[in-house]
Image 1 (cartoon, helix red, strand yellow):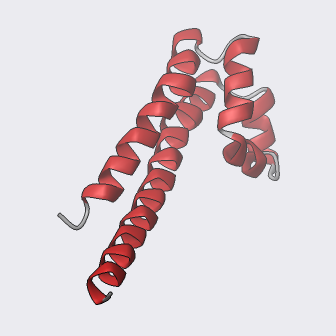
Image 2 (cartoon, rainbow, N blue to C red):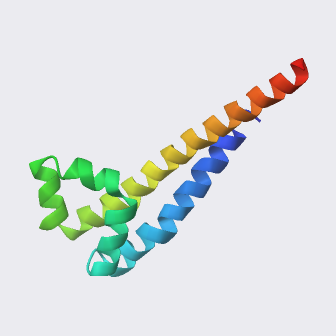
Image 3 (cartoon, rainbow, N blue to C red):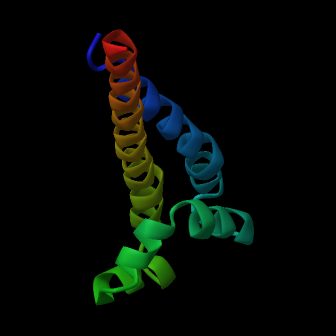
Length: 105
C-alpha cells in the first residue's frame, strides 16, 4: 500500500511520455520536424543535458539514428517515470500529513 501512489504517478507520467514523444520518435525513426518538436518540448531536460557535452551534441545533430531513438524513447520515458514517482510520493506525503492533522484535531 505504501508504494501505490508513486507507482501510479510513474505509470501515468511514463505513459504520457510514451504516447506523446516515444511513439512519434519510434514511428518516424527520428526523422521529421514533428518528432523534433515533441522531443524539444517534452524532453527538454534530456536535450539540455545532452547539449552540454560534445558526445551529446553529436547524438542530437548528426549521430546514429538508433542512438537518438533509444535515448529519447527509452531514456525520456524513464525520466518521466522517475518524475511521476516523485510527484506521487509528494502527493502521498501530503495526503498522510492532512490525514494526521485531521486525526489530531
